[in-house]
Image 1: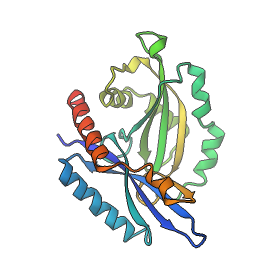
Image 2: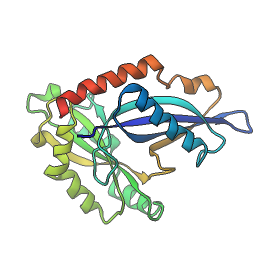
Image 3: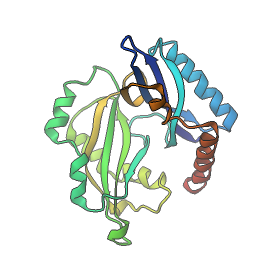
Length: 228
């Protein structure tokens, strides 16, 4: 069975004000041995700087993580907040229905939409093990909030979360709380963010060294042993 990882790439360019504009976005790759994977990543980065990020330079990789293949309502990554152990703590990262409905009007027509589903893990082993997680996915057509909520609360989607989790999560412990992210996929990249920096060194701090990348890849390969 094919395995996939998300890889966050960083690009930058110097603007006319001598500031450094950086773009970080994630792309999904088939999990391969180190050299083959790096070759795929470099080919993708080259296509990007020769395409929609023309005049940018590719700086490197900032993160890698387990994911499914790119697809509607697939598991496309997760952020964990182990410090948010009370259910009400999730309120600070959830968008209101009004905020989401406003964002619906800003969605580019026919674009994919990044969505972050927020869950409170009311751990059966006790409150000390409670946590809050965001699980990311994409949709290609927004029908209604109720439709999104229905997917997030479904056993099928919760089963994906459990499957791709290294710790022993239980579907019945996962309480869907709301949506944290809702915006158009831009420039083909998932979860794209931009920033402006005074020095290039401020951007480089987020880039993994070759040794760090190899270590992270080894860790993902080890984690996959417990997933499949």
